[in-house]
Amino acid sequence: MYLMYSDESGDVGTRNSPSNYFVLSSLIIHEANWLPLLDDLIDFRRALKIRYELLMSEEIHASEFINGRLSLQANIARNDRLDLLKKCLKWLSLRNDISLITVRVLKVAGNDVFDYAWRTFIQRFENTLKHRNFPGGVGADTGIIIADNTDGGKLRSLLREMRRYNQVPNTAPFGGGARNMKLRDIIEDPVLRDSKSSYIHQMIDVVVYFARQYYEPLHKGLKNTDYVYKNIVAIPSYYGVDYKEIVRSINEANY
Image (cartoon, rainbow, N blue to C red; front, side):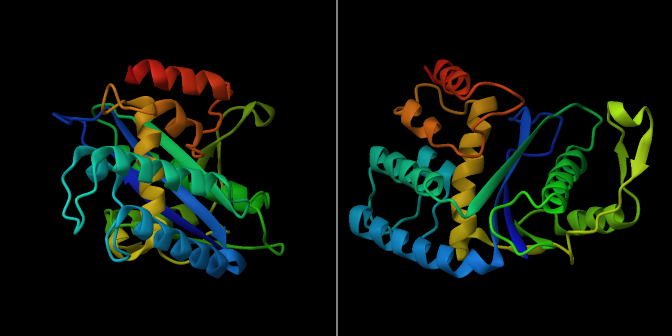
């Protein structure tokens, strides 16, 4: 079984909202590799504690680390907080047992942003499971969604609906119209977790924060952007855009 840890950045509002985009990112790990991942992550957190005095019980929350709205025991300087986030991205980029998925939605008034984003996200997870394209696995593996705190009731209803009725538009070889492609590889209702008690969710929080930076820079003049974005493994190449072009665009947006 594959576990998909997911987190959000931005909000789903379309009126008087400070954001134009709603972004979802996820980290997918096979159950057989889950404990080694967790053990390595605990060791990584111990290294961060030694280097930055970040307690093992303290949460890594990217937006707070950048904005400075913190309640940490140690007074970690802003440049060290950014360096810590860079190390998180670097740590993820060196692993070969995980996959990361990012979906972004440009918010339009009148649209159900939450529904559209999560529907796309879920379908991407389902398709990759069906085609056995995640690393590891033993064949016909299923998957389960473990989401950071979100609208759990709405997400649960959406997932249950997609198991019974899931109209997917046909691609060119199949002509027009749509097919009812019911979910078959994602099991159970989504599990909701508080990122404060989940090291894995804290890592995906860093990914989704910087993924949104690509589309909607939150802080112009952010230092070390080239290094940070070279290691944002959530979007190595999106919709055929060259990787170097992504890094160049991000740097232009932040300087």
